[in-house]
Length: 225
Figure 1 (cartoon, rainbow, N blue to C red):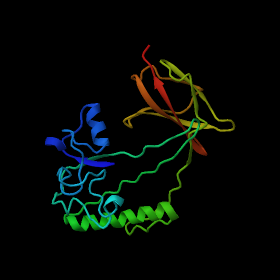
Figure 2 (tube, rainbow, N blue to C red):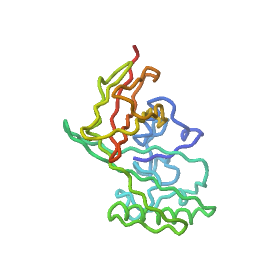
Figure 3 (cartoon, one colour):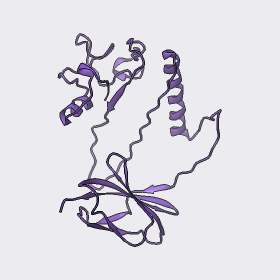
Figure 4 (cartoon, helix red, strand yellow):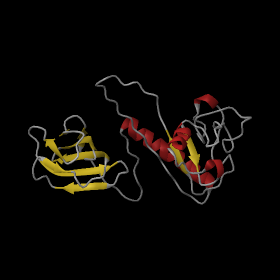
């Protein structure tokens, strides 16, 4: 699902957990389900799960709904999206890739067309590996491979220290720890297999071990002692 919101009335920012849940299930704060067309609140229209999908909503083939067709002018816009449901068996892993493409132009219609063009570029790159040339710059970047299966941290959860199981044959170069909001909490060169987490707040953290060949990523939970 996808739902846009702003800072007024039933379009306002979510605050409580129930507010987020409603938005992630295409439900406005007053309990009304999102409907197709306009500002998404006309209950005479059929319910839908995706706001402003252009012509891509399979439930409304041949119809076009954008912020432009709804008469909504460019402003401070925010949104929440969700995917699923997914059934994952014990031990199974899945990778889901998302791309959010934004464009800005004083002319709303030009911006929409440009966004559609950039979206096509991203899809072509993702499916075929064909990168559209940039007229302003050129660069080549090959990111290191990421392995989420071998960076073992224990004990997990922990309240003071965690031990790092370095993959055999690898030389660790840097340790990074992020909180769930993406803030960097720890950045250090590895000086042993023991990491002090006593100063971290209680919560869930992402641990990243960078080596000369690839990155190893795990999560751990910091407990209160």
